[in-house]
Amino acid sequence: MPEGDILRLTAERLDAALRGVPLVRSELRWPSAGGAYLVGATVTSCVSYGKHLLTRFDDGRTLHTHLRMDGYWRVHRTGSGPAQARAVAVRAVLATPAWTCVGWHLGMLDLVRTQDEQTVLGHLGPDVLAADFAEEGVADGVRRLAEQGDRPLCEALLDQRVVAGLGTIWMAESLFARRLWPWTHTSALDDDARRDLLLTARTLMGRSVSVGRSRGPQGVERHVHGRNRRPCTRCGTPITVGQANRPPYDRPVFWCPSCQRPPA
Ligand SMILES: [Zn+2]
Image: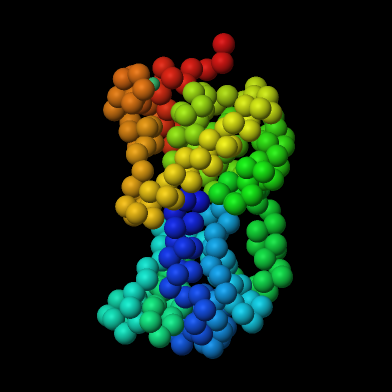
């Protein structure tokens, strides 16, 4: 599932392609929004919040989309073959005379008034990649993390109501960076340690965004995620994989048994 760093890169690409020029084509292939007409409206910004994407228009509307497991957006030259976007898996098409943005396999799509964006985002914790996270959001995140009590850190970090943006990759990499056993209870950390953990996640994901801008998404090195049985980059111990949450909602947790020991 794409995480906040990929959503940030996606938002930047869509913003660069669409902002400031009235749309000449819009198709929302979604039951609740199929009749919406966006031709003539102009995108004022496209931004991400956690794993959510907000495309705002100058007529006071916001297109809210979420990639869920398999979704992605592609940008093509308007008039090119791929820009036709006839496939059944295409859920959204937004085009200016120059660029056509095609949303494939989207898992969520709503058209809301921009002033009502909170109706689709209000349940989320602070966005770990928000510009003001280190100054403002992190205190909220620390408080929400503290409220998780005996819940394992790996599960709390995946819960978008605690902090928005992390998935299995950055949950695992952040816990490895802080040398935390993934099943440590959130209550076992003090507020300083919770803050360090959230700011580490922000740093790692921010680096991924920077690298992604030049080398493309997935360009940043990973220390544990997806490295089952390969040697730890820090100590050489084989990386292992455990589980967060119970089936059917279980997610993989990659970790180093030597660097991330359970609390004594
Ligand atoms: Zn290790």
